[in-house]
Length: 282
Picture: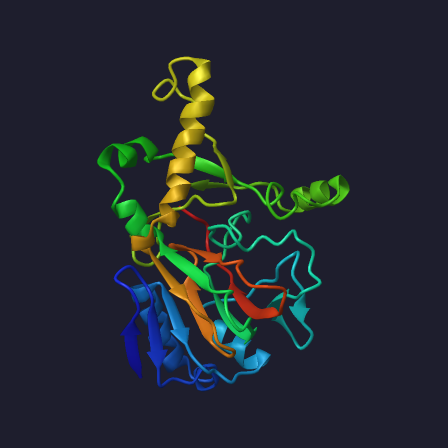
């Protein structure tokens, strides 16, 4: 095994490892799990694995969960299809910075993503280190957001273009949860910014400490939230991965955000993802 760091912020490529073998080898899975804590996102090239091996490897990290809007593989319900084709409608939501599924009460721990087919050029994915983003905030901002909580919504993102009946039914199934603005990693204890494209508003900002008069509330809260969300946009916190077929990415969803770049012409971009059940954000 060779581990090659990719940027100063996060990410490493693992060479000389077969995930097919790792899917059957808990000890090797544990080594990769430890590397993920260190580097936050890992990449492996040219992995010839089946959906069953893909899911078995991902289960070294925890149980897998489906997605209410994504189709699961016929032979393996733990694998969902994120397939974009030339006949897709324009409501494609890849291109925003986000942690996966923070609209869940318990967001995912992470994911294992395999490229089945990619455009000849374009369609990269970017990741950002949100622990570094928090660490480098000005002191007065850290003080201002200490103890703040925020609402996250599927209704305001994936469901916005759906008929109202579908939108309300999905909201009843997944009520908008509240998470801390600063999350503590359950394993490392490090703090990270935990607001993203699914975040709609703070839930406990409007207090005497922050608001003199009612008119302070909306601009003060919204401007602070947008400032925090924009920290993922800083290049010094990021890496960018150019896909080849059979590449695999593994990321820690608790402390990173990612962005699927929508720059490719009408063509196929097919990704299979195993999403790993997480724990409550604190």
